[in-house]
Length: 389
View 1 (tube, rainbow, N blue to C red):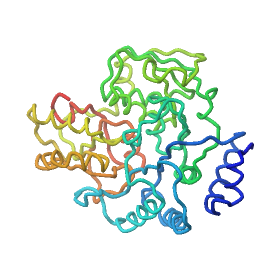
View 2 (cartoon, rainbow, N blue to C red; view 1 turned 90 degrees about the horizontal axis):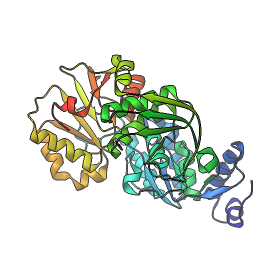
View 3 (spheres, one colour; view 1 turned 90 degrees about the vertical axis):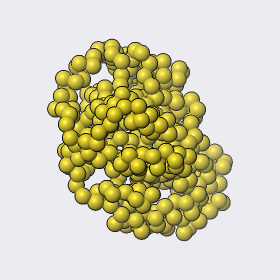
View 4 (cartoon, helix red, strand yellow; view 1 turned 45 degrees about the vertical axis):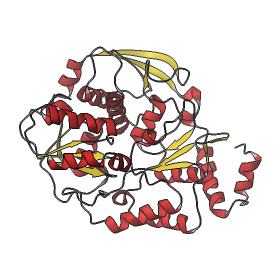
């Protein structure tokens, strides 16, 4: 691998042995992937920081890095934790609170921003062609597909080491020739949140190459977010080109297959996954985390339409939304809606196992079934809250 003089200085330990070791790992992984150089990154996003995921080995790794003087060299954000940061949830288990706070302390000592959200692009929108080192599958898909930035799906440790060095290997989706769409999918009906999640599930389960989507009319960012999160969860997709959305010249086209889909095809294919109505034990909205605008839209729906409680409802949001919309959170609480901050049910533990769960998120549907073995079904927000969204 070709290294610049600055990179050779880092490897030689001239900026400290911690940074040297971090760069050595980046170089070794890059060489294994066939990279012939490193590229500078502007933003790292560290996933896998939930104690329920990393356990004691992960905590020790972070504490050793922090105690050795490791510090981030670029803007670095952090994924959700395993506890609700409000401390008030009736659903989220707090057994690992002490351990999670130690994880947070180690990250913050290394100057990782205490963002605790899967929406790093909400805090800092990446530019087209900008190199990133992001973990978190839905964030990676948004970075590549919506913003036209360049990042692979990095594991949490690699993203953190890249943040310390400021570099990542030039391989995979960092290279324009690896960003070529080969399967065209035409979807002929307007998307809503349910069909966006179903289309993402279908892409993840069916399409192996980078797809190019033709959608009419243009979907909202809310629908794009749900679609990409579902595709990334079920099929490891890191780039889904969306005509008219993905910035031009950030991808190539070499179409070898064309597929046409309609809403009725998705509803038929996933009929066993759909909520049939009635009562539920838990409704979950917020995977990926809700932005402030999305939370306000839900509030407006509840204010304008008669809403009868069918079961417990839980929303998950980033800490920054909690701080900006503190008054609105109090209103939601009075309506009996629980808002959890800096976490989500996918990366946490429950105090009790809920019964029937409904969600508008294909990603939540996939992971809550797979990881928590819950009885989960998909529905639109409109159907879940019993009002027009």
